[in-house]
Image (cartoon, rainbow, N blue to C red; front, side, top):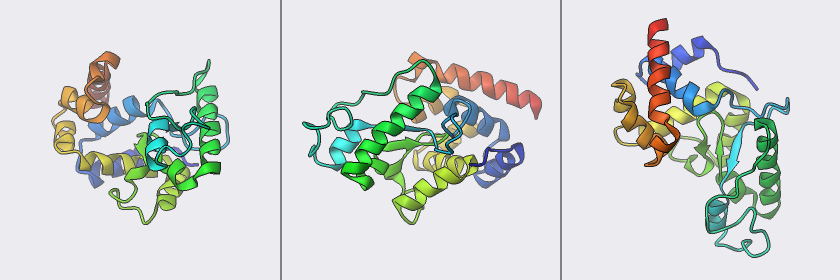
Length: 197
């Protein structure tokens, strides 16, 4: 478990040909501060998507395990703190792994960028397990996955480069981005980091 450094953020900006302030804005807004569960376990943050598990297992477990396998999205963990919510997500993951480990790992979003496991091949990993191992290893690896994913979304890298935060938020967070003010948060973070450059 290695936390990201400013030098590594500079490396990422060069590697993906993006402005450093844009990289830092994306990291600050999309990562919620850390890529790991804040309990000292070394586990990456995840969000388990029960509808993906349902799809990957053809609904085989939806009747017997509706909390972790359901045709409808949702059922996310609740709790007073980020630590409690993250631990509950890992409990859901552990239950799903007992039923179908590959489907379980593919059904979660991972790390700082919350990149879905099922994208592993498109992102250039040798296997799903290789992707998961990278998520455990460091926040730098988590962000490499995030920006590899950004490259797959037509127009997203250009929008980051041009600081078009409405487009960035729509492409990365979906059409409901304004509800959570992602575009405003990104613009504020970018302005802050631009001043530091």
